[in-house]
Image (cartoon, rainbow, N blue to C red; front, side, top):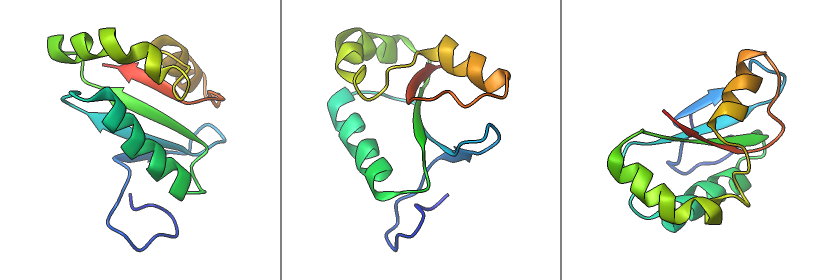
Length: 104
């Protein structure tokens, strides 16, 4: 889904609005540079005023787990919620209230 109100080619991988808030979802199958990924998607969040929360969805692979073992704490400031917290909120139909990292 294209960024709201922008004329550039950037887009969210998915947008969820079933919980009373609008959440952008950015999916990564291969997470190699955690900081570069964070910067790129945080710029999208800054530039799309329609998105209230952002979820970084990362494939559960050995390589991604290794990257997150090194970089998870640096992501914590922008993505404070973990998989269980995000999934529990969404499953209950509640707005999670913050950005989160989902590993599936």
